[in-house]
Each structure stands twice: as structure tokens, then as C-alpha cells.
Amino acid sequence: MDVIALLRSAGTRVTPQRVMILQALIDAGHHVTADDIHDDVRRTYPVIDLATVYRTLQLLKRLRLVTEIDRADGSAEYEFAGDGRHHHMVCRECHKTFDFSVEYLESLQETLTSEFGFLPDLHSFTVTGVCAGCSDVSESPTSGVPVAARGG
Image (cartoon, rainbow, N blue to C red; front, side, top):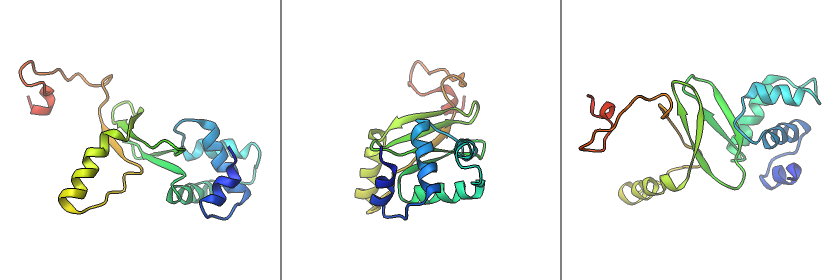
């Protein structure tokens, strides 16, 4: 992928730091922390500081080239947005991050628009909860609603 062309098409100035940080995100191919990106970029550009990484990540997020995932433990991970939008679920127990498709939010977007005249920005959406691996929730045989969700 031509990172320089990608930055130019997003309308931002091309700097070596921006190129290296965006390239590190693309190369990672998964969710990474700012520290991970900093460590990766420092291998080829040892003078880069962590503050530059954070500022660049915020810029790339505003340009919608990167998504930020707020984790249940208060930290954040980043991912190259690419062409395919998707959203995230974060387990507050094991802190794993799972992707889910934009299709799950289409009805929410339609409802917010039709009922409230509100145009939601669903470019990046994170849901925090408990994953199946950490949950001991059993389904109620009568309602199909998890027992824990009903309070009993």
C-alpha cells in the first residue's frame, strides 16, 4: 500500500513520522498499542518520541485512517481502518478485542435518523461487556434471555 499517497489523499502533510507510524499500523494487521507502534518505529527511527506517536495517532484518527479502541481497562489500541469498516467488542474481564460487522449497527443508524433526525457517526464503535469465554451466563429455557440479564 502506498502510504504517502494515502496521506496525501487524506489531505494532510506527509512527514517521515506520519509515514512510519501509518506503515507500522498497516504492517501490524491487528490491534496494537501506541507503545507497540513506538517500539516498532524506533527500530528504524530511534529519535521518535512517544508524544509524536500519540499526536500522529490522533491526527490519523481524525482523518479516519485509523480506529481507536477504548479498552475496558482504560488503555487504547489502534488499528488501520482500511477499506472495510468494522466495530469492536472488548471484554472487561480478559480484555480481548473482537471485531464485528457494520451490518449490526445499520438498524440503529436507521432508527436514530428516522426517529430523531440524528445522523450518527458510526465510523468507529466499541461495545464493552463480557465475552462468551469469560461468561457463565446460561440461557433461560423459556425466554431465550440470559438469566444474568434478567437479574436472576
